[in-house]
Structure formats: structure tokens, C-alpha cells
Image (spheres, one colour):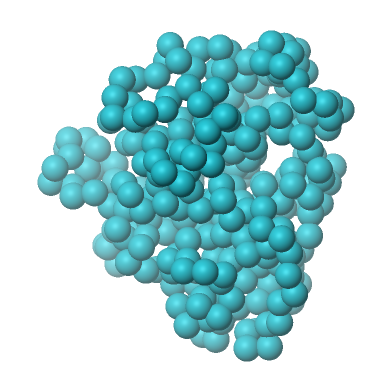
Length: 301
């Protein structure tokens, strides 16, 4: 599970890097999409597929939230990846290089495949689910369906970052974008729900007894420390927030993210824990406040 945890850590630490100028003369421009799209040689079809999905999610989020961020999308081969990423970023990890440039992989890769656990060590029913969800047309297992969806999670961050929302708690920014993602998939691509939900369930079902930090207070007060020094612990938090996002959608419906957005948009000041749960319960959805109140009790040790 370590690669998945490193992925989640990178999302948290890289999304807010400062913007910088980029030149894409070695890439091909793909016209006719909501975002600026550039892709590596030989990957036009893959670029069309990804760009179309980003278009659909962008339109859905924009219609819901009444805001549109500026996003530049790069779909890169391994060679181009090293030219346009910042630092030693493993090929296959979707991420921002600044506040609006989103980079995704054009090819399947060992990093994605490394997420598949040894199936002969898993319960038969779980092994069967993994094969059904993460098997490609050639019969090989790959985490590409999951990684492609995480690009839409990153798209959600562009909305609240560029709109200047005060998300109140660092972890609430993650929960909000997970809820946006889950809502879009449930409403527009329900066939992709298993790819989104299976892996987080696997992580959480193994329990939390090995983790130093498990409370939401820890997640907010020690956010960077947990991410930098306890990456596996951070991955457990992210998995909990993925599952919580699904529960929030089921309880609050497809407009829950809009109500949440409006509540935070109209409240710029830092709220106390009591004020925050009251605001979420009254203005967004009671399920969000209940998740906060019940977090410790529902933690599986």
C-alpha cells in the first residue's frame, strides 16, 4: 500500500505550489477542450479520452458551484514527464506543478501496477472484486481506472484554491474534493464507482492499531508532520475521507457539495469546532457534522 500512500501525500503537498511559466513547444496542442491541453507524441487518443473526462467534470463542477478555475492539462509520456515535472516525481502520479497545471500519465506503468496486492493472499471474494474492477481488456491488472479518477480529485482542488475559499480545516479540503469527485462519478459515471471505492475500503478494513494519529484534531494540527513523517498514517486518513465522501453523498444527495461550497464561501473567518459542526449541519448537511462527531467512535482499531 506504500505507493498509494505516497500518492496521497504528494497530492496534499504539491497542489499549492506557486505558479510558474511553462513552454510546451515539444508537446502537441489538443484543441476544442475547456482547458488548455498538451500531449506527448503518439498519445493523441489517450489525450482525447482524458481531456473529455476533464471537460465533463469541469462542466459539472462549474454548473454546481458557479465558478470556473483556469487549468492547463498535460498528458505525458515517460520521457516528457521528466521535462515538465518538478522534482523526483514518479511516473504515473497525477499532480499539479503550480496552481493550475495538472499533469497526468499517458501510459500504463509499473507504479500503477504496484498497487495490486498478491491476490492469492486475499479472501477469495476480495480477489474476485479486484479482478473485476482493475483488469484491463488484455486481462492484465492495472490501477489505471483508479488513477484516472484521482485526476478529477485534483481538479476539485483548483476550484476551492482559485476561488479563495477558507476550508476551515486542512483535512476538510480533502474531504470536500473527495465529495465532489464521488458526486460526479455517482451521477455521471456510475460504472466507475467500484474503481473509486474498492481500494479505500481495503485500506480501512485492515484497522488503525498501527497508526500514531487517528483523530481529526491530529489531522489538522499535525497535517504536515503526518504527511512527511507518517505517510502510511496519512494514507489511512485519506482512505477514511474517501469512504466518508461516499456516505455524505448518499445522505445529502447531489447538491451537498453546492450547499457546502456556499456555506464556506459566506464564512471567511476561522470557526471553532463547535461553530464549524453547527454550520455544516445547518447549511451543508447533517451527515458531515455527524462524521466529525462520530469519527473517533467509528475508527476501526
